[in-house]
Image (cartoon, rainbow, N blue to C red; front, side, top):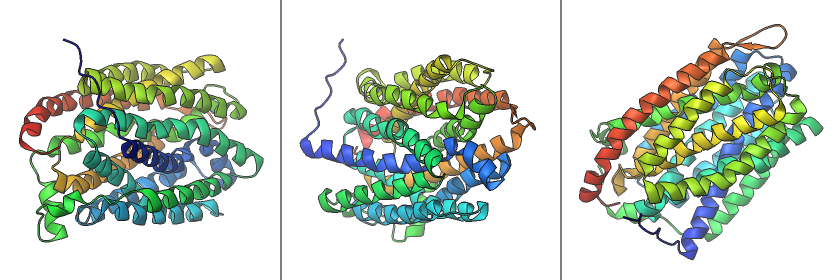
Length: 412
């Protein structure tokens, strides 16, 4: 039996996917740019790996707090207006990062950015779920998550170039400029997203939050979301420092690694999304998990390695990561009812950020930097990420088995 033929996008749906992907590009770039800047920021501000871990975690913890605070209200407003409100705060926080002269200023700026930016991803997911049926969500998530790759292709090399040409503040100035453009496009051309407002909800925001948090069908999804955050937050903040100090890659070649990896995943993202819709979301997730386990084991145990081989390993690692993120988001989008999608995604985002913040702090505590700059115990992080990947496979299987029954009862 041949897999079903994918449903085609309408012109407006294509516009929505494009604008949400562009928005995600700015959000992800703001977070991702901290990783390659680590090798520059730590010596320039005179901070330790542990302090840099706090700078990364500050975003995550404040995003976790704002997710909890916004969950009760997430389904009570037009999702477009909610998106614009938080996006405006994100731009403000990024502007503060652009002028941070000290570690404590940077820490405060990351907190502000996280308070607003951490909620945006959940609103994007709610909009994507409202406007697209489950049969299309693999492709939707594939295109939206391609923003992650685009941030490497366009953003990270440019950010590092600007940082090397001027200073590490310059990439944040550029993010503010393109974020303002994205906000204007959304405000003018995107239609309101209000179908959920016609459905019955709890009388109070607090009641809506508690009812969503305690919903028995959501527990497994929340657990998977928290576990999936472990890998990126644990490995990525110290990736550039690891490549420079342990693997022997010159700092000037780091943009090349991100550029090639980003180009590969720009093409891989939509293909992974199409595969998830056509061959099965859990099956695609299993493939991505297998690739991730192998490549994490290799990547975190590398010693001095030629640049070309590092590029290949990094590309395969990110293909594995994307092959987990895209189908998992599509599959988890089938869990909540339409009137709870905003709260469900806000709580999920909060758990993801909190779990990621813990992972980043744990990485900062585990990593020890020798006087010559060499990072010790990086292989320990790889073992933890592999264990989390195996656990997520088991939990995601249970969600996979439960989704068909839920779709028979609930609207998509």
